[in-house]
Image (tube, rainbow, N blue to C red; front, side):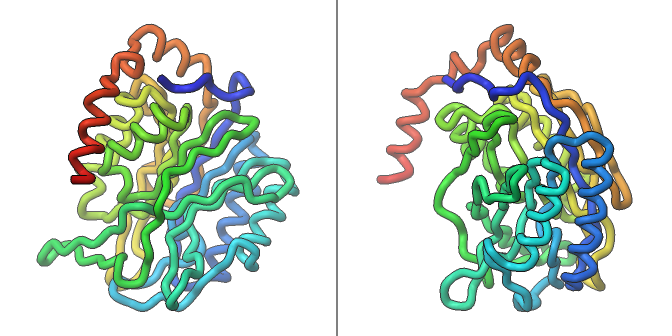
Amino acid sequence: MARKAGRRGSFVAAAVQMTSTADVERNVSRAVGLVDGAARAGADLVALPENFAYLREEGASVAFRETLGGPVVRELAAAARRHRIHLLLGSIPEAARGGRVHNTSVLLGPAGDVLATYRKLHLFDIRMRGRVVLDEGRFVSAGRRAVVADTALGRLGLSICYDLRFPELYRRLTLDLGADVLFVPAAFTAFTGPHHWLPLLRARAIENQCWVVAPAQVGRHNEKRRSHGESAIIDPWGRVVARRLRGEGWISARIDHEATRSTRSGLPCLEHARKDLRASLRRARTR
């Protein structure tokens, strides 16, 4: 059964939508400006999309690598300190062994300190003839663990983009690790996004009775790559309470933990989840 929701009754979350490119300086400057705007408008937590600082062309090698103490993280940490907010860096190409990177979310606290890191578990290795060809695993190393950050705002479950298609991860985040808010920073493709993005977000909210905050990349990044956009915030009943389909900017909504408690007590699906079935599935995967 999920643990008790966070320490504050509610907070305002903002999801930033961007059109990032391979120009790191331009991307970071734009991200800081959007964070500043959302924070001044009253956000307690601002979430940036996947690849907010650097989005490469399909098939291109990773020309930029960051560390948790690197210049991009430091600049965004200064913004978190300036506004005294929690700030989710949707993902950065974190330097890894062998010249590879991790696709890593970094959660910063109001003091600019790193509260949690999550390295993307499911890599987007997809070949749809004439449509989408992405080979994330060519340069990226997958993470190894699910992450929930216990913060003053609540228990925040971290995921990235393609993870959205794997419901077992979100069961782990909620049933085992006690998440009450799920984050899905993404660069969902313009091909799959119109059909799959919002239905999957709503499904994860409904089945886990969690708030879902999903900041997204949007539009044309280069000659070969376009993202769907449609940043969204969804409540535990599955209602879309904020959405931005096109263009850069942000959306915001009040994340009310009482709504989570009310939904879970009125329709106690998480209490009814069969632990024996989940255990049998785990055993089957290890045989």
